Image 1 (spheres, helix red, strand yellow):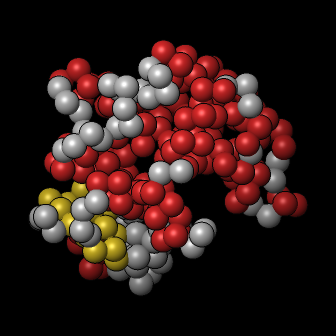
Image 2 (cartoon, one colour):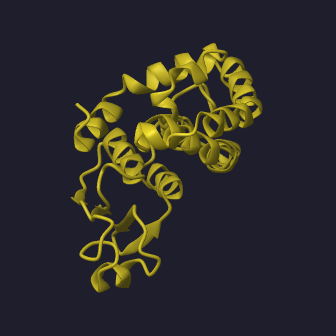
Image 3 (cartoon, rainbow, N blue to C red):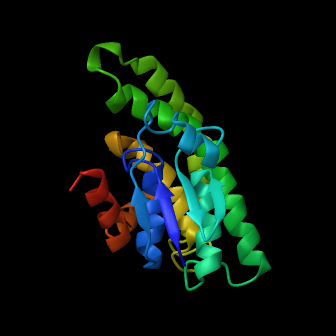
Length: 207
């Protein structure tokens, strides 16, 4: 397996780096910045015309979209993170799309107004509106984790869990967001103790 991961670790590329570390596969990390010399350079645009990271080259197969990449890698490598049958594959896809559509837009808005922007430009009303919009999908996630013994698919940590945790990562600067959801809080705490997650944080410079 020859895997190259393009993108700096302090972007959504961190999601793919986490997956690669979880799977224990060898990879080359090309920390491509979002710049004229990086994602807007002709060489990178030849690889990904949209100019987005992460992008991977997996034995000649070029993919973008972080959560889709993770599904691909899990299924290619196999093992406990991968779906074991069609039902698990479908559930992993469902929870991945749930993370991208129901959680990510508002979770990112919370991050923007609690961490990313300078304090003087943060909007508490925008943050609170995003938190309110998250209440319903987080309640659904809470029920699923409680029913699944702390996991979303097959009673074990899979790509579905990892992809959802990658999006919950946006809420780390506002821990109160998970206060009403003990199953999610426990799920997130367990995810942050995984060696793959810790390796990803080191690549980001957060450890």
